[in-house]
Structure formats: C-alpha cells, structure tokens
Length: 218
Length: 218
DNA sequence: TGAATAAATTAGACTAGACTAAAATATGGA
DNA sequence: TCCATATTTTAGTCTAGTCTAATTTATTCA
Ligand SMILES: [Mn+2]
Ligand SMILES: [Mn+2]
Ligand SMILES: [Mn+2]
Ligand SMILES: [Mn+2]
Image 1 (cartoon, each protein chain N blue to C red):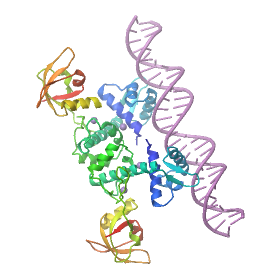
Image 2 (image 1 turned 120 degrees about the vertical axis):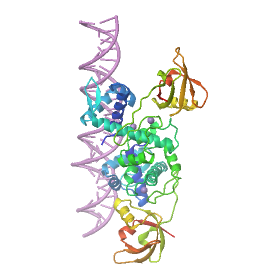
Image 3 (image 1 turned 90 degrees about the horizontal axis):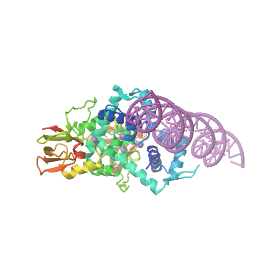
Image 4 (image 1 turned 45 degrees about the horizontal axis):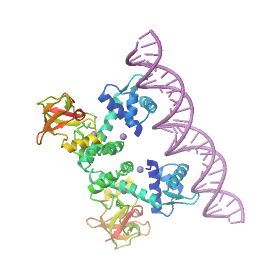
C-alpha cells in the first residue's frame, strides 16, 4: 500500500518520463510544489520498495512494478475526471484538483465499477488515454497543431496542458476534443495560424495555444 | 481545513453523542482502533480549533462549529454510500470502508453536485438520514423492532449497526429498508419474535437482530 | 583545462500523529 | 469513608514527510 505522497511522486516521475526522457529531481519537486531534498528522500523510499531505480546524480527509471502502480493511479485520476464532467456536469477546467484527491482512494472494485458505469471510456475530458484495468493504453499517433501546415485537415485529440486559462480560452473559441479544423495559413512572423472549424468561421490561434493542442489527421 | 484524522475523531465524537449522552475517550479510541492517549492529544487539538469543549476527566461537547463540520462529514459519507449502492451496484454491506475514504474529499461543489445527481436523497442505504447542505436532518420517530409487540405493523426504517454479518443476514431473509412487517408473536424466553413480511412467509428473528432494526409505525 | 554554475544529496531540525509506560484522577463497593 | 479499579492524562519515543543550510557532484563554457 502506497501513501498519498508516494503515489504523487510516482505519478510525477511517470508523467515526466512520458514528456521527456528523464525525470529530474528538481522537476519532480517543481511539479509537486516541494523541495528537491524532499524528493531525494522519497525517491530513496520508492527505490527501496522496488518501484523505481534511482542512481544518485544520474536518473530515475521506473520498474515494471512502479509503472504498473503509476498507470493505476493515472487510470483512477482520469476516470474520476470523466465522471465529474460527464455525470456531474463539471467544466473540464474544474476537475483537476478534485481528481487529484479522488485518485488516492485505492479500491479495485470501486475503480472497475466506475469504469463500467462510465462505459469503459478510452479517453478523459482532456483527450488523455485512460489505462484499462491491466494498465493498457490505447495508442494514437498525434502531433502538435503547431507543426501543421496550410491545408492540413485535423481533429483535436487532446490538450496537453490542462491549466484553467488555456481550457477557458478554448471554451471561448468553441474548440473541444473532437473538433475538426482546417489550417488556412501559418504566419512565420509569430507562429500564429489561421484555422477554420468544420462548422464555423475562421479565426486565429497563437503559437502558445497551437503548441498545446494535440491533433490527428482526419 | 481539517486533516483526515481530525475529521475521523470529530465524527466519532458526533456519533457517540448521538448514541448516548457522553463521548468517552476510551470509546472514541475503541471506535477508531487507536489508543486513549492518542485521543487525548487529538481532543486537545480539536478544542484549540474551537470545534469542541474538552474538560479533562469530564466530557466532550461539540461546539456549533464542530457539529457543523461533523454533519458535513456525515453528509459526504452517506451520499457516497448512496452513490455506491444506487449507481455502482455495490451491496449495502460493501460500502462502508470505501465511503470512509471518500468522505474526506472535501469540496463543496463536488458534494452538492453529487447530491443533485442522486436526487437529493433523504436517507442512505442503511436508512440513516443524510444532512442537507446546511446540515439539516430530516427527523423521524423510530423505535427498535425489539420493543414492538404482537400485532404491531411496522416498516423497517434503518439498520443501526452496519456490520457485514448483520446486513448479509437481512439480505438472506429478504429484509431491507422499507420492508413492511407484522409482528405475530414475541417469545419472552429469548426475546425472539415471529414476524411476517407484507409479501412473504413468516419467520423468526432473534433479539440480536430485532434490536438493531429501527422501525416506524405503518 | 578548470572555474563557475546548476543540480542533487546529506545533515539536521521540525510537526503531525501514532505508540508505551507511568502518573493522576474519578468512581463504586465494602 | 476509603480503597481498588477504571479511566484519563502526561511524559517520552518513534516514523513519515517536510523544510533550510551546507556539501557534494556534474556540467558548461571561457
Ligand atoms: Mn494526487
Ligand atoms: Mn485529464
Ligand atoms: Mn473516514
Ligand atoms: Mn450508512
């Protein structure tokens, strides 16, 4: 049984390894709003439990066991987010903090029943994949909207930064998971691009925004 | 913001004061499976926060603030139990431990939306009243089935001990919240009674069981 | 190459929440 | 009344998880 803090550290490692190839002590600390020295202690503890390999001054790698635990945690987090949005009517910008708490209620029966109840969803409200009970994830080939070119037709698959501000901006522009877009033009000067949703008028997106939209070809 | 342990202590005090008129240190310890000395420390802390009055060697009384917090906790506990049974298909004997964890996710929006989603239920799966968002409880006049007499017609309103064994025994006999019964006969020798459900054959209940069934006249 | 800097670890301190053992207090029965 | 017992509190210890400050190690660049 892992404590809440152990779980949060494990998840931070998992997320950082997905984003880049290394999980640095300082980045874990920044993500958890704690200090590097605290992270060092916790990494030692997680290594003792066989959840990760920690070579002091080199990097952190998850073991199969550690990855399994992390995936279960991600599964619970994303199932709860889905529940909050689909069933309780929360906005996708309002669910993160609550899910951050609910994810720590570790009960396999609860998790599996919730999964059934929601219809075994493959993706959460932000478009992130939900691992199944065995930790398997549905893979997709997506790319950032910011690397697309004029004439490309794409569908928004996920938002890679779920800060409230970005999500609300997307709401304001009518952009959501599944929205189809055509790229009209890319402006080299500032990296902004003009896009046109399938049903709607064209508008412009800054590079800050397009960089955080994961899209798939349509 | 209260910690999980503070919340559990407060709830134990609240429950003990409801059952009897005093909440003794040793009883709190027993309920929380902890030691009297630990309880003393926590009572001091809760008193410092203005949630209860603790006169060493005398008793514990909740302040209005403390009662309010306890009621919110009870509200969350019972709403989650209701969710688990009504929506996720859990048995009424399976929900307590999970609800004991979920109750500590303190988010008013979550609680209120869950309440709405469940249709603002007045009672949980064990027949216990669910406080509303202001902490108000629907009062009923119930009595133990064990004090009823031959010919009494009653409806089961609540089960006052939610141990797995009792709940499964009731399941086996087809007794649930709302079941209507006629008391046929009471046997003074062992306190057992013969009862007949409205739709079904008569059978006998031991005093151990009838003592834990709260009923209302029908 | 070798400082300067960045990153990570170690050392030591603190708090919360538990425990055991000992002391203090209250209570019930002879 | 007064002692035996039950209950509660106090004193002191322990672990988990955090912190700051100091030290160690790795990296970068002049
Ligand atoms: Mn979390
Ligand atoms: Mn998400
Ligand atoms: Mn609890
Ligand atoms: Mn209940």
